[in-house]
Image 1 (cartoon, rainbow, N blue to C red):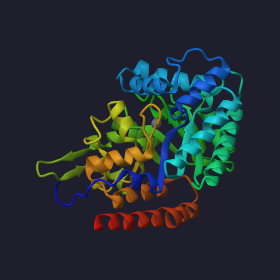
Image 2 (image 1 turned 90 degrees about the horizontal axis):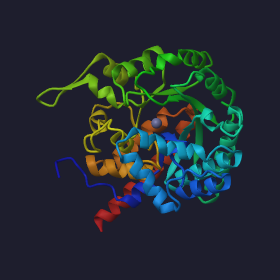
Image 3 (image 1 turned 180 degrees about the vertical axis):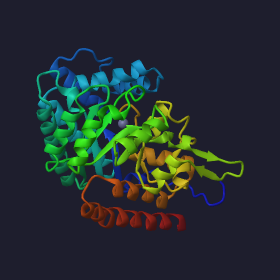
Length: 374
Ligand SMILES: [Zn+2]
């Protein structure tokens, strides 16, 4: 092991560590058994497998196949079975419970209301049902001794044309659990500036938003998201490394855009497993997160699509700990970065940092020290 590196943090400690998640898609995190139940209830007959285990593996295989068509098919199924109030409430409730069980203390979960209208719901109804589900899930998680706070992000599809309407919904529900807005979907050919109207409206309303940028597409997309649209955060943003040169001695030279992102502390919502799956990074070990963390960018660790990537926050942190030798101090740094970057009021962020995250890590640090001493 090279100097300065520590042994990976034991998995049970990572599982118990207080974690913060800013980038997680509701339709990418369903339980396989729930998909089967909902399909049976609604008469959805297109599922490719008929027991939870094989369905779970089908999702992981399809997502890792390298075929965009198969990857998109996975969302056709999760979206296909979430078209009723009951289904939306159930998957949101389970999402909150699953994240809480994974040790997440604060999560921002995003969903696109426009994808759930196939059976006659309106976008406003979709938002209401999901928020009720999150409330129920939070109450259950608290009763089980794992309190979690969930904030919803409303996503507009960048390939569609009514992002302004979704932005207005985000503002309408800002005091009822919606904390921000996002655009997602195919990046190439659909620059964020197509949705300027929505972003200008949100800025006028003093509302927060993040933009999926710099995942499939490079620097121009990141530049537009920040300088034209005014994004508070970047979804992924991995391609910011295209603006960083490493010389023969290993010194990094940042271009103007990379400097701006670092100087302004613009949060990067990085999703290691998902980025490897989509080819945005070659492997976890080669993921730009290692370099960006070293250079002090405001990096955060996220899951993206837990079902498709077969992952959790515990797993993402464990993979990073193994690949880069990150110890508890590093994991706490990622977690505090995320909490600082959350779309929650400042006082609530401080409260979580000072009363849950720091004491939680302090406890794990002394437990790890005890283990190493014995
Ligand atoms: Zn995403």
